Image (cartoon, rainbow, N blue to C red; front, side, top):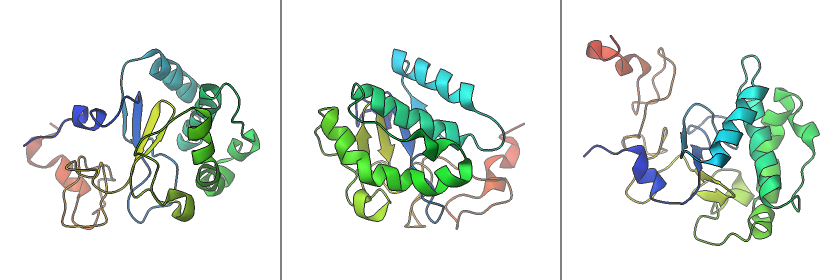
Length: 188
């Protein structure tokens, strides 16, 4: 049975869905390589801000800054963050997850959010073991969610993922081989 993005949207009323990162990759708040979006005023503004800030090889930096700014706006400024964390990629890459670990529950509280998607052990480990719902956004773990496969990486290498998001020369431990994506004329 073919799984479509709508199956992930059935989990939530969030406008934007993304996943933290591949298994074994650096801990980041959200990977920009695969994002699901509903057409909404929020996503139109979000993508305009994110893409306006994109510069150079690291599009993650403005993505993360835009996420934190959106969460601040969703709490009418009750949540604020130091934008110095997002001035340089090298700094943000190290600090963004720590900042989210520390602040996720506060953001949820100030936005009056309840529900099962609280990130599980994220505040202790920096890795999502269950989804984390924040204003307008659902961050998915690198693991299955219910009957849905992990979006792009799963710690159990024998399980399939929703999509192969990797470099053409990379083998993601058998789950996904970049060269196979365009095999048999699929990209011709």
